[in-house]
Length: 83
Image 1 (cartoon, helix red, strand yellow):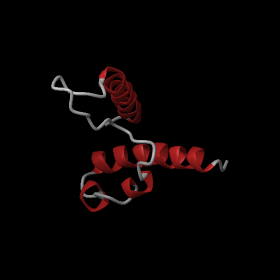
Image 2 (tube, helix red, strand yellow):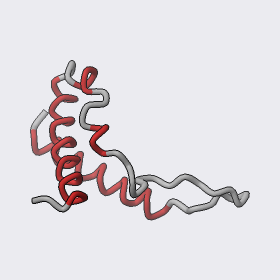
Image 3 (cartoon, helix red, strand yellow):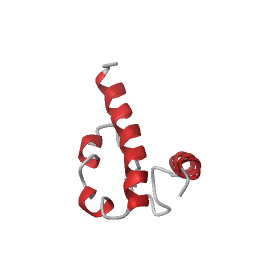
């Protein structure tokens, strides 16, 4: 799979994730508090290793994972304030 196709697909998925966050309400129709996506204290470092054994077995999954992990590392750096 071409790197450009993977990059475009990841961009689309990122935008869809943002839309999900925007549309999600904080309460269900019955008034119960809903757990929202991307809590402020989410442990992104956990994602860097979780499931790697499985994704490394398939070339396209490994390539996708490398790109996603790069974004995750950037997010971790921005949270810690390091450059």
